[in-house]
Image (cartoon, rainbow over all chains, first blue to last red; front, side, top):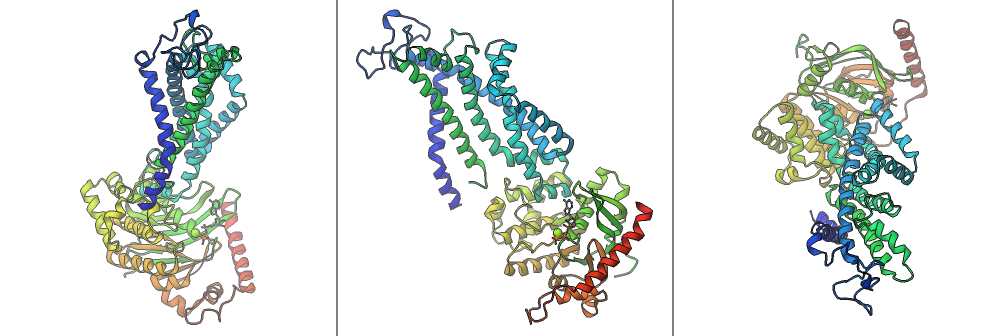
Length: 282
Length: 296
Ligand SMILES: Nc1ncnc2c1ncn2[C@@H]1O[C@H](COP(=O)(O)OP(=O)(O)OP(=O)(O)O)[C@@H](O)[C@H]1O
Ligand SMILES: [Mg+2]
């Protein structure tokens, strides 16, 4: 018990810091119309390229400054978070569901199921992912749902490979054999005995994948293949900020920092959760 | 024990091969009477674990049974469909495994893990299962059942885990327990306690045990009957007292010479003799020769 307590205290800071930022960003995104200080789409050429609040020439109410069209950066970041989180949750959850289920089946049942699933994964991995994504979106058409579908279709293999390997090593354990002897069915053993043991990895991967989904969405926005260009997205903001980097660095730096921080927090949060929920690691 | 009593487990001429055709079990026959402990002794790789797995229906996929019958309390496993076989094995048998760490599910607490089987497979009520488990934990001399039931497997010592597994094995009142080297993974002092516990519970519950070991000292302590296995073949079978009094097969004698004694740990220790091994090889080649024409 003592051991468990000290080590969970050790894993706490990263879990809480990462979780804190994610929660803050999520709440801001959900409550965007209430908390955003300005209309994210309102252009005002009188206010173009205002600097952030601590620099000379800043305007009150425009905390992080404005872009080259005079739109408030903070408000755009907050509204951009909505799309980032929707994509993160929907795409990662779909990829996770498909990949983990197939990985579990391949790893636990082995044999035919494993051979077919593993072959499909190999074929999938032969495609370069970003190219694959761009291709898919080009075929499906731009829009939020095609971005989500594209990410799920590409990244389920990430879950499948890891979960397959873990399920496979679990399936070799004696407790699985004992369950067989006791008379449990194969399906029951897979879901009740093996699944709980791979769940910490599923959770960690899920969180990591949310971060990856945010990046992929940003890349697609950056190359103008995500959703309509009117709605602010982090990737779109980075693309715009790149153009005015010499006149107004903040237009690029804030969305970039937000993106990196969020992605980092997703992966740290996942690792923290894994350490927390894995009874052996704990 | 009357000669007409129906054996708890009977194995008749069981042969198994690997995918490459190599035989791992060579017409093994043995019987375990109700309430009796039969030791299955032999060196590493002799096929002891294979016999246990065959009985419990968990042979690896690469191993195929090519002949023979396994009969549990008069029911021929080969004549049952897969589902009926699972039900029979689940209800009448249990395993005490070698490695108490991997035999428990690492992500589930001991309590639910133990009661689950009684409730879900045997259909007991939760309360009945719970009190049964507590009774068994008491029998295996676990003094703080509350803590143990709430623990995860890795929070217990190896000896504790093995006690839990013994309690779990006896909980459903199986007629036959396969114990596969249940003390090998433990340190010596704990080994003795665990062995004594198994013997005690076996006597109290009248359970038959097929006790797999490579240790003749253990054989002498726990069993009434013994089968000596070499390269998947039973080379000698006898009552335990008789085996130690007058071993018949040269391999059994060599095995005894290779076993350290408490009284004189180093003096008489000898590896198994070359000529004995050559004799065994000839014996097995002859057996394979006689076997192949009818099955090949
Ligand atoms: N999964 C497997 N697939 C194929 N062959 C196996 C497998 N497991 C064991 N064998 C082979 O079957 C034979 C019998 O192995 P078994 O595990 O029954 O021996 P054992 O008598 O239990 O030995 P030990 O004392 O080391 O446990 C050995 O030759 C071994 O190499
Ligand atoms: Mg073995």
